Amino acid sequence: MCVVDIHPPRAIVKQVTKSSSFRKKEAIVRPAQVLHPQLALQSQIAQGPTRMGTNEWHIERRSSFETESPLARESLNVSETGSLSIVVLGASGDLAKKKTFPALFHLYRQGFLPPKEVHIFGYARTKISDDELRDRLRGYLVPAKDASAKQLDDVSDFLNLIKYVSGSYDSEEGFRLLDKEISEHEYSKNSAEGLSRRLFYLALPPSVYPSVCKMIKTCCMNKSNLGGWTRVVVEKPFGKDLESAEELSTQIGELFEEPQIYRIDHYLGKELVQNMLVLRFANRLFLPLWNRDNIDNVQIVFREDFGTEGRGGYFDQYGIIRDIIQNHLLQVLCLVAMEKPVSLKPEHIRDEKVKVLESVVPISDDEVVLGQYEGYRDDPTVPDESNTPTFATVILRIHNERWEGVPFILKAGKALNSRKAEIRVQFKDVPGDIFKCQKQGRNEFVIRLQPSEAIYMKLTVKQPGLEMSTVQSELDLSYGQRYQGVTIPEAYERLILDTIRGDQQHFVRRDELKASWKIFTPLLHRIDRGEFKPLPYKPGSRGPAEADELLRKAGYVQTHGYIWIPPTL
Image (cartoon, rainbow, N blue to C red; front, side, top):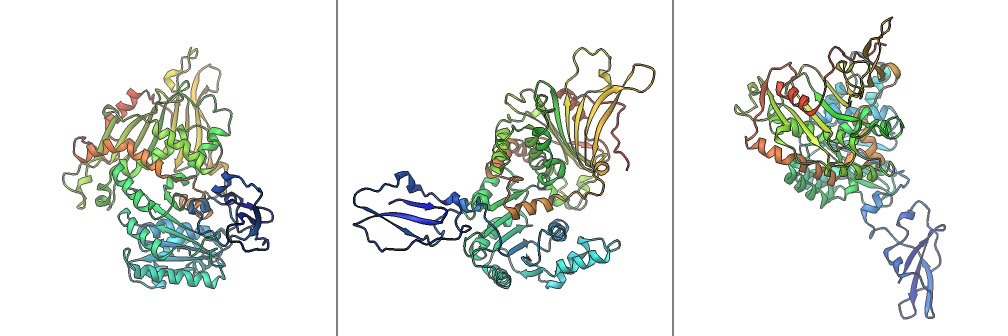
């Protein structure tokens, strides 16, 4: 038997033999939006639709998609007109109050969450009313002192979209009640069955992901699949090492298919991180320069000028490598080092990122410096003998044609002398230096991720005056000056909107997660066993002096006497 979709009109042609049971049917034309052409040809097409001797043809309507893979459905570009229910699990926690709900509010103010379609549900164990949750959130949405009347009205209208449900994370009772509330919202919005959309944001610790996902799968899935969907957003840290990450991936993967899972890394939502691919592949200037022939080293840096500040007990379970380097900085490295993708489709981009990760060679012990700031163990929630690093410099090396021999220096630390995150690409020395200016410093291409977002190129130029002397200066694109009046969206706004749109480009795929943990797990296990000790450093310093020495050995040349100053408006 051969089944073929023909469009337009959308009808199914079925080939049957005289010996089979046959009931004549009339051709029925189906609406174009119901069946996507991508699902048109079934696997039986390989047999070829022949019409020989005893064969007859009739046309019938396919009744449903129940046999279709959710993987295929999630990849369709269908028109989404049903109601949208956004469920924030862990609604009473800090992450939800400080990041998730403010991001939803900003999307609402910009018109991306129309009240005629959207309702927001908070779910947590805390027993509070709808109004109590709204009161807790109000102060995080706009500053009360400086808020205009319009902003306060918007806050009130937004908070009225929020319904709170209390329940545990591992029993069906609470999730059945949640599903009842969602279904009532969908009914009130006249959303046709199967067209509604359900987004579950897990603002929760990873330890409860498996039970929560099981409850969602059991109790809260979208009831049909005629264009609607169910998607799950999970926060980092996604595991503590390769084994735990794979175990977690397997547990969630048994419940949802990969296109339904959105592993969020908020660094991928930052404006300048998203600009990376545009800079590299839309500008001819960089194409011939972006390789080992011209680049000496690459630094990806994250610095904070404060310590753990009451979160010492939580931070001590993970440390700076798990908290920052293995996820945020490694994702940035992928965008800096990857090859040009075939297209901007999410899978093509993520394929190239995985290739980079799989090309990273094992980390060498003599290319790692760990530190712990003095006073870290004074936190009563931190063990007296803690071996957890609050600072790390790690050099990664990529074994491929483009990057062989170029060190990628990942550096992150707390309680340092400044707060910033940046990518610093340092080029090689100019051969035949006729101006004798190498001591002034090398060319550098710097992308300042935060604060004071900017892209600037450090150059050597002639110093104004009668003498032929040189000085370091810059070509500067500072966003605050160039794009005055333009509000740069928060990373969470961007990523939640991507989730609603079904765009997984800026989310971490399972094989990508596995490859990243594979790089760091051996080092992390040695630290956990106490075999690799962090060096002490003073709060407010640059970190251990050994880290600067490691950079020097890796080939980084520091520019003395030059400081980039963000331009004033």
